[in-house]
Image (cartoon, rainbow, N blue to C red; front, side, top):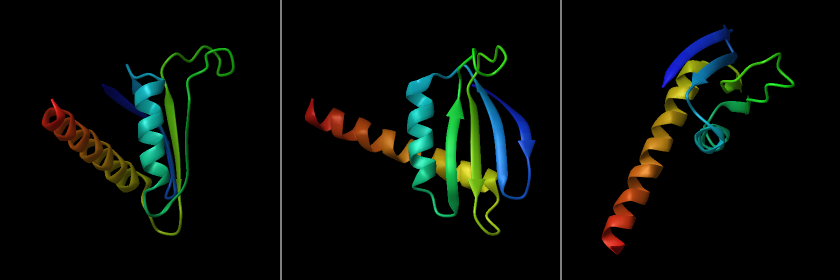
Length: 94
């Protein structure tokens, strides 16, 4: 996975996440929407509408003084915890 910051302000972040598809991006977006201080989270990976873009671009908008990079870190941690819990439950059921 390769990350490239496209734009960052105090409350907004646009970051390209190379090598990922809808599955990962939807999970990450969902966790971000549940993260404290996140006002909006979305992604785009439609080449026809974005001038030939092929890698997904994640956009995060935060509230108040919440740094969007911190929100992204918290969202990624939540994804990891969720997948770990699923793996443990799967192994216990096998």
